[in-house]
Image (cartoon, rainbow, N blue to C red; front, side):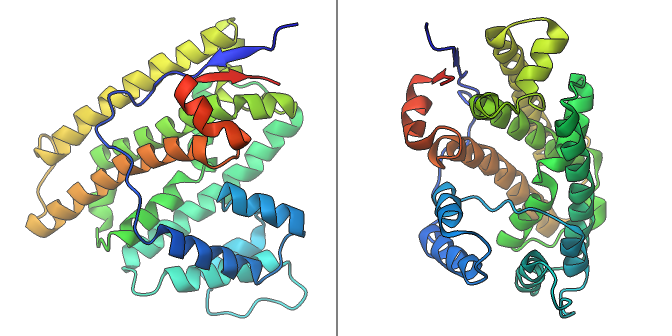
Length: 297
């Protein structure tokens, strides 16, 4: 019997940002892995998989929220080590970070934790939602909003809330998140099918709601992805050219341009990670990236 296959579209064929490797990546990766390993949070074989995937998604609990809000407070004796990991992480990451940026992280982290609980409940019930319901929930639990704060931190930006809450910046963040969701779900579909855990995936959501097969679901998502790409690039031009977007002075305007460029790089980097991390395609990721053929086996 033939293996079920599907073809991944070239979603970023018109994306103007190319892959760039940060010169500090390997050193920072090694330091990050060593720091995490110092807590001995995983069994050795799980730690090996974690390192190979270059992935930093932990099991979350209430302790992380308290640790993020109180990074200078010692964690209670006997608490799960995740609390201390979260405390040290934010205490180190938030040094010299502007107050608005810190506030955005804390607020978005709280939203993320709440949405993870909802996601777990839906997964446990194999609930198939509508695409609008799916995207509304997934925008929170994919973790992009708290991650975008580190884009600000890495670029040493100091953007006030009124800039980051402008509707066009909000729209760019939302479209970036949606591109990450759709790309992630097309790549993760095989892994989730084999784990019997594909009910909470955009491919399944589209297949059920549009009454189509895998190829039809992938095509629907690809078309929608193209629409978002076009909108992102159009809104980006509006912001840069101050078409419906005000000027806050040369310094802030330059920072906004850097932030948007960072979003563009983020989308490219995420696409590269899908194939290079080993999480979805193991050692065959680069082959899949080239052929675009995924066999569900």
